[in-house]
Length: 268
Image (cartoon, rainbow, N blue to C red):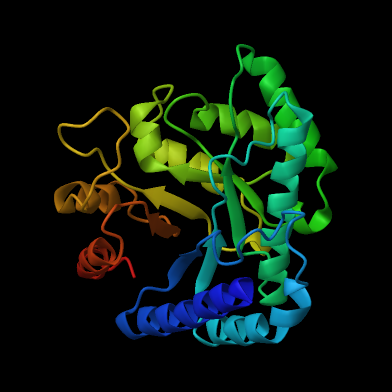
């Protein structure tokens, strides 16, 4: 009963959020991985896919009716290139249920599940190879939705492009991570490269935007949007069509500011 009460509340909240976002013009939304607790865990005895299929389909209808974009981003413990088979097995199970949720919403392949490549484990070449092997063995429903992003510690955009060349996974350009860790590519060149990995069926290329929180360790996401930096990012990328996900602590507050800036520059 507690599981059902939690999921019911989560679905109600999601419905309210989607409707609010349509009202204010925020049409790209990332659904929390917490929406279905323990969805991939053996402890869960409820057949959530059957019980919530109609409600998820209704949410999906609303998304499609208003031309919204949906994505998901599994938690950091999802590591498909781990040298530990049990970690990989659990990670795949998590990807499976998130793909199932998007399928139950009846969303096309433009609704993505986004992850990092994973760890290096002292041998980046082998770690990369494990990612590719695992990716190639994933179910089609997961491969159709999975995308990777460059990170700020281990895998540059160039590394992600190499992985794409070897297995075809689309690449999400994370502008902040690129600023932290790169191989000298300009923002324009890096974004163009990432966008080239997206096929028509994948939808408009997705990107992540944030900036450095002043006074904090390198790689710490900003608490609120740096308006000057965001405006500069839009100027740097003028002429390119992509969807932006803000990874900023105050979420909607910054999103509404970003929307105003984008509109002022004719970008949406």
